[in-house]
Image 1 (tube, helix red, strand yellow):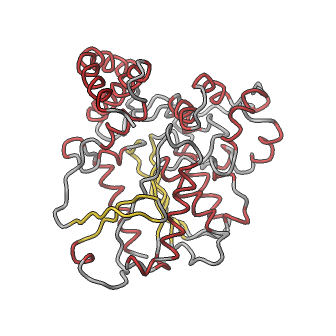
Image 2: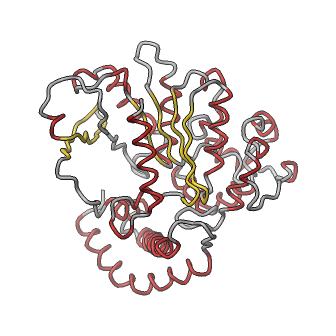
Length: 384
């Protein structure tokens, strides 16, 4: 936790640096970010990208000064100003087996003591790094999910109708939790999973979507390995090696190439440009592998789970965005699900980019593509 004195110092330093950093960020996004034809509202995307770069620079500076961590600054930016509040929505803070969450429901649900078949969200507030290191996030999410499935009636929940969902990194958690729950035979089955632009593998960062969208706003190609290193509490100096694939042993690459392979991606997603990389040209670095081998685990990369697990997964809603470096992770996982007979509802947002949902409900900063995502997700849930 950041002390009151450090918070005050952070505000003072940020206030002093912010004008200069904002100008620098605008220049960086202008020179370094690409806004291709078809992307949703490019001018608004420029503003959001400038804001993100500003937050990243300020976070790194404040972290170097020992005032707070970059994660603290990112969390404040993402959660500091709430979107418009629905007056009919009641929020209750609860704990599931020690894991805090916020139960959100309409007033009529709170006042009706019965089992609900209509949906209400209960987002888990798992601990964030670096104070709560990997893989605690998965452990806490699994604990909370198991608790709810065992004691659903205590919360007015039909345990046979539970949907596990997430977006971006949260979709990675949701994917892995659903896979782990397959082995819990004493629990009700998960009714469905909802995965919104998920990141599902750290083996190959040169797939078509990584090449085509390498300089897109909100999540560029270089930011993916950087955040991976931060998430795993590893030196960010390893990021370049991850991009090159130097962390993947030849045997591992051969084992999983049947699932992580550009050949499994439909041709329509390669027309914007793709150069196939020869895996034999990857310069394997044993030291990098030892430091970052967790990236190749099924926990971090649930795309690598065995067919015996995949075939038992619940019906799935999977959403991808065209201008997203993680697009192909979703496409590859969709193929694995469908090959194993799992029903999949797929939504592809042609104008969307990664992280666009973070701005939904923020009036002028909200994107039409984000509204489309909300519409498609709610339609899927209502149809269950």
